[in-house]
Length: 380
Image (cartoon, rainbow, N blue to C red):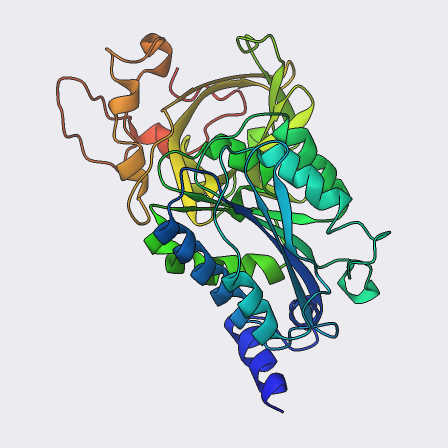
């Protein structure tokens, strides 16, 4: 009875109904921790990491062959991976927690790619008698990578191969030495990247991590709609980037609140429409779990017959809390000393935002409060 109560409480915490995929995940899942034991992590920090891992395990009410199974691999250099325990080595939470306590820190470098390959070939290999072949867990397979540093080797292809094997990867980066862009490439979406300042702040991400483990990804969804002249259109970014890779942007499909950035045929980033006033709008992108960057954009002209779009935009910026449109579109991005094409950008502030610098900021007039005519030249 107690286990059933714990399942109901965790389902309620995640905001899902009983009988949902979340409840199935809680009831039957295979979760493997990939533990960085490189030389940069001291014994006290390693202990904090093990306490955090135990906290994750303790939130699952039914641990064992008929519930959530846990495994662990420690890694450091390219040829140094150790299976601390397989998914079917321990049949209850008490023995899993004891096994975590027994893991020691004695590594050197950091080679995440080799460790991910090791996971696929061993702990998540259904042809090996290690507990990875349960039918109830086939859609609930998770690898939690915890690291404090950069890595060497072909990490991204190894991560993609593991994801192709139906394993969802969550990446936890500790400290300022981590390569966030690499964690984004490793993880199953930026929302599954977790960043902590140091080993003492692991508890701050616990709720989000558990939610990500057992909540199906629904994809981003904005708070406003992009201008209609963007709907179901694809615009090439001209010129190409420094590597001569073609970039396109598109809005369409079933959701006109999301703007997809595409590099060389591969979708890389989704921008959400965050807030909008006429041709000024703020987009945001997820860089890690509950961590966002924002930029101000202003559309200048469209020629939808030729798929030509002219716009100005600010650099990506971070804000504490939830910024307003005027916080992001503060006029600085289009200052005459900063904008390369200031004559095209013209006015710098939305109509609704106050002028704070009369020398550099030009507030747009009332016609900027709407999308304007079909040709997008209301203020020409």
